[in-house]
Image: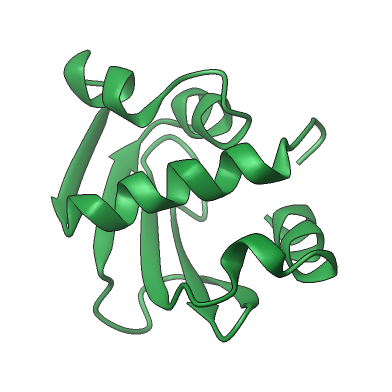
Length: 108
């Protein structure tokens, strides 16, 4: 997760103007809950639940990795039951469009 935070903060353009808290519940990994805080062109990632998120995505690590690397669309993950979404779905869709702009590579 630290690598994702570093990459986003080195190039804040795609996250400018996006202010939200996105929570990932990665159920086969410890620690399992991460909150991504997008605010004023910066990303901060914290373990655990700190605040009420705009959207929560529950998924396994393999699906999380595929989603972050844009190898699986959020829509496909949702339709195939690989992710469960609670909260503002439009925030989740916005995350997907942001991730495409970063074109992340492994290792994360």
